Image (cartoon, rainbow, N blue to C red):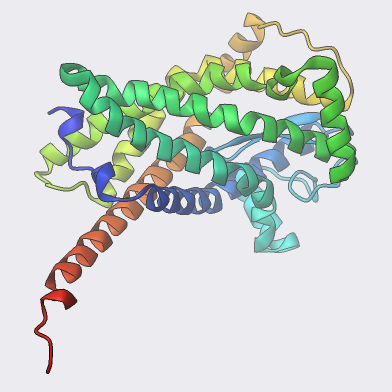
Length: 345
């Protein structure tokens, strides 16, 4: 069964604003669900090797990656070390007991600031591109998700990259908006507009291949599951399962790119904070070491549920607006036109 024949909500049946609302809701729900996992992971990392001032690390909740800067040692709530943890479950229990449940979502604000606009741009662009490309590619429309996913990721990364650079700069030097503006204009005068997209290349290195494979396999998997279960419309369970499987596959295949991207992100972040020299080299030994020591399992545990929750809530939101629009159209058709009513004398 062709991926383009699956029973997804047609893009023309819902407005771009409704698509944005659905993707925004999905981003918030996904962040709420996955953020505690990364908070615990970073606490476990921090107790093994503390984060010195100016050091950068990558905070990823499965939906978005962020470069985080240690301002004063371990002062930040979401990477400080309040106790000695023996494992993931022990960390969950002790953090809740000592600091309260809310501390598990202490990394949420910086996530939402970047994740919501990036996700809205990404998912809305993907749907709009699919709608346009389906008519232009004809017999090759099966490859529309592959192309649309890659282009949508390039677009969202291009928009978000300067914002991420600005956010890192503000966090590292505690700049006011006026001071930040002066720094940005100075950088533009000295290095040009390209300086705002310094981290653009490393971001695309992993995200574009991941996005292309994810959407292609998701649409294929969703269509196959609909056919297998004899469903005319994909259910929440079907989209959840297809999202988890496609996200798992894409995360495993792109793991080497993820290692390179993470190393580059940290180097670029520290370039802004401790003025270290950016080498821009890809060290294959580091990639091999990461693959052997940590493997694909840690990334799989984080990415698979994030992809599943995000795509299922997004599809649910689109289906909700689709039904809402249909109901609204039926009500409009049933209402008699005021011009057709006989005039009273």
